[in-house]
Length: 296
Image (tube, rainbow, N blue to C red; front, top):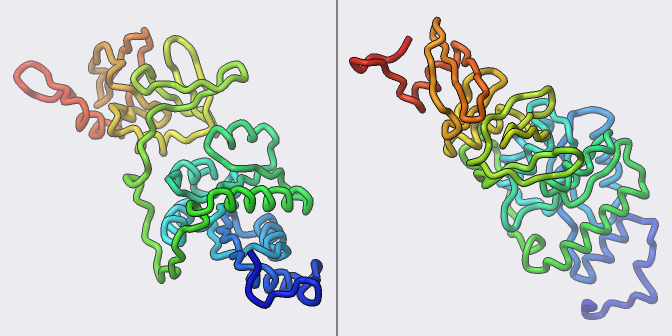
C-alpha cells in the first residue's frame, strides 16, 4: 500500500544509500526490524554490528555481552530478532534461546564457528544460523528470511509494543524460565524427545551433558547448572558437581560417610554424592535413620 503522494518514479531510488532506503521504507509504512545483538565484546561482535549497519531495514536497539543481561533485556525491549553468538562468557547462546522462548518471541539467529551446531540450533528453536566469520551474502539472506517471516506473522512478532529502554536491568531470575516438558538428546546422529519421568540421571560432559535414560545415553548441548534450576520442580536434585539425579529413579540410598550418600538407581547405577550438596539433597529427600535423626 503506497503512502499518499508517494512517487516512486522520481524520488528516493538510491539502493546503495542506507539513509534513503530507510526513508523509502518509512514512506511505505514499513518499520525497521528491531535487532538485539549478543556476543563477547571484540572483533566478532563489531563485525556483526557492521553487517547490521549496512542493512537498510534494520535497527539495533541494544547489545549485551553476557547471557543473563541479554535475557533480561530481551524481556524488557521485546526485539524482533535476537542475533547471538553460540558461546557467551556465562552460558551458551542456546541457553538464552531457551530462556526467552515465548509466544510471541524474537526470532533467534545463532552465530557459531562450528558447522555441527546447526542441528542443535534448530532443535533449540533458532530461526537461522550463521557460520562465523559471517559473509555479507549469507547475512543478507538471513535478514531477508527474517523480514519475510515477520511480515507473514503480521500482528504477531512485528506487532510487539515498543518499550523504552529501562535505566537498570536487574539480575537474572532463573525461576522465570519456562519449565521444560521434555529434553532433546542426540543418539547416533538422531534427535530424540526424552520424557523427564523416564530419565535416570544427567551427567556433565565438558560443554555437553549426557542424559541416561532406559539404558541408553543421549548427548545434549546444555549445562548442568541450567538444568538443575529448570528441573528442580520436576523431581531432579543435584548430588554432585557433575551429577543431576531424578529422585523417581532412585531405588534406595545408603550412608557413605562424611556427609555423603550412595544412590542406587532402578537402572542399577550407583552414584555417590558430594559433601557440598548434602543440604540440597536433604531439602528434597528427608533422609532419616531410626529415631528420626538425619543420617550423617
